[in-house]
Amino acid sequence: MRTSIATVSLSGSLTEKLTAAARAGFDGVEIFENDLLASPLTPEEVRARCADLGLTIDLYQPMRDIEAVPADEFARNLRRARAKFAVMNRLGADTVLVCSSVSPLAVDDDALAAGQLARLADLAQDFGVRVAYEALAWGRHVSTYDHAWRIVETAGHPALGTCLDSFHILSRGSDPKAIGDIPGEKIFFLQLADAPLPAMDVLQWSRHHRRFPGQGGFDVAGLLRHVLRAGYDGPLSLEVFNDVFRQAEAGPTAVDARRSLLVLQEEVGLGALPPPVVPTGVAFAELVTPDAEPVTSLLGALGFARTARHRGKPVELWERGEARVLVNTGPATLPHARRGSGGATAADGTRLAAVGLESPDPAGAARRAEALLTPVLPRRRADGDAPLDAVSAPDGTELFLCATNRPQLPDWRADFTDLPGIAAARDGVRIDHLSLTQPWHHFDEAVLFHRAVLGLDAQESVDVADPYGLLRSRAVSTGDGAVRIPLTVGAAPGDDTAHARHIALGTPDVVAAARRFTEAGGRLLPIPANYYDDLAARYEFTDGELATYRELGILYDRDAHGVFRHCYTRTVGRVFFELVQRDGGYQGYGAANAPVRLAAQHTTR
Image (cartoon, rainbow, N blue to C red; front, top):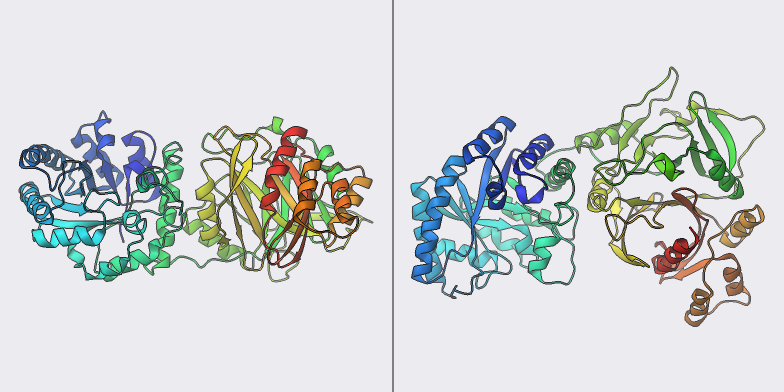
């Protein structure tokens, strides 16, 4: 189906918004009146610009508080409508949106509303324009889609239909099943948006917290199925009010929006994409550093051994158990470098720049990523180098889709030469999870990317108290926990406190691992005594157990399924390590302890 996006969903001037929508692959746009009023372009020039970009103008939004008002007010509304319909003719737009009234002058009279909308449609028809009537979730008297449809049906005018908006329907908890009773030809337009499920005023929710489909908690796909069964064949259009999107660059936001529609169409059977290839594990984490000594000293204390060196690049392989870390002292693309995010520089030191994901079909995973508008990264490859597919995550992190020790697939290890006489310990240590801090304007995009492109499952969003505000975190993972990636975002655009990325190493005995680390000269993050006093009040421990945790700085969490013990190294550059022990069926990340950890990092950095 054709796709469209409202200009209010993007940042910048009208020209910038139109260009971003076209480059992302949209077929059309909804023009919000404020964007036109603020533009130096005439309506004819906007029309020509859209034509040059291959965009249609699918909807214009210039009018509010039209219906069920006193006669003198309605006369003024018709006078205004005449002028707006003339502007639409100049734009080349043939559908106007009319939202249900929120005016204190409006009365609760469906017959009056139907009669006035019919008169408005009469005028619109003279200009070749259709009127799409939409129920605002906070409408004064009309706030549900079925109520709006009853008024349209009563009016019985060929130029009057309804506009369905997933936010206004789902935010009120309305059952979309009755959409199937609306004739498809009377659904003049469809607007799609997702949203989280917070408890707040619905107007505030709508104006600031909408998201693209797949980024919130609404069943947008279910609603769309009802609309399609009704016979709707117009564009799928996104209307998303979001403070973050309006401050981010329009181009990447438009790509994120387009990706959300591609995934939505796949979900409801409107389009086919290469199937998702779910990763089966973490092959490696790659650290980029201008000075290898601090991070290699840390790895050595953690029990890693330098086992191999890349044949043509300044990259070393460090291993312990099943965990592998690459240390790259050469130039590399750095994360957070996109979209004016205040990106990392060489002065920041060591950072987690790339992740290798074990894939049963690396080429297939890359095909899906490319079909979902993900940049496929070019690689300089010397003769004999393993052919590796790599893509860029929204924050700029390089994701390598690779295989380890599988004869039927190219092995990334083939690019490395083993160092003689060195063997890594085989003690059950593995990468338990990778925590990737996101630039403030990438968080929702990152969740959709990891879910749609990589096929990971997204857990519920969690807010964590930081000494300087709230951190937001949402984990994505495989069903078996082989890949776990908590995505986090700081409290503000300029937040650059202790929010480095980290690598969590799973171990069967975190106490023994912590002792070995400190005996090797490593320094663990000190945890305040007050934390352990609180633990003693909340839980019962065996003799000496809590004293050991207090001595080593080990944090403790418990849920209905199991126990989690973990501790942290000091930060090197913008990276630190976590040692974790999961017992039983514990599936979380110790979120209850995050405020204590963050406060400790603020005081020790």
